[in-house]
Length: 248
Image (cartoon, rainbow, N blue to C red; front, side):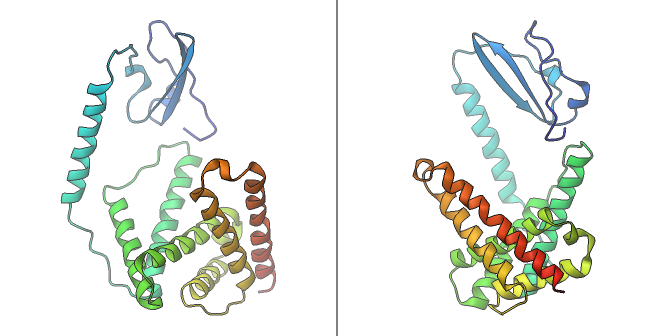
């Protein structure tokens, strides 16, 4: 189901979910009235027609069963051997993480555009986590920083590249520009080198620092106007990258 599609309830009696058949194999959402309220249900992997609704007096058994299931899944995950990654040091470790992240992002977008449920391999999350931790370790080694500090830089870089992939058509259409943008972002953020895209790199850092300050604060501390000003930082970042592409 694409993010713009709503699979609405067709019938309410009996209390089962009758939905558009195209929603059966995808993620779905349904709304129905119950005792003067609207109940929202979301699901994936189970056909809506198999869902039955009934009132319950005690949620405790369901919560215990849920926690037990999560515990079993977590234990199974911990017992799995860590993935074996090809050797990579320094910027190569960063680049491996970026390539994996961009690949995952592209597969997700392709699935959504094709109105398919995104699929992930069993070890995809473990591989990405291992690559992330390796990049953090290399950042700490290169900069002499702590792992938390290094993690902040990795997060900044990966999100910067991800935003480039989302916001600019040239990132996918022009391999030479894409490679140059990734290279300059790594050299500036990881090695501290001066690069032609310096203005865009600085604009991204301003945006990202504001983003972190807003999401880490209590909601009432920042009125909507500050969130709007935060989003206003993105155009200056985009303009700086456009100027960079025009100057090449």
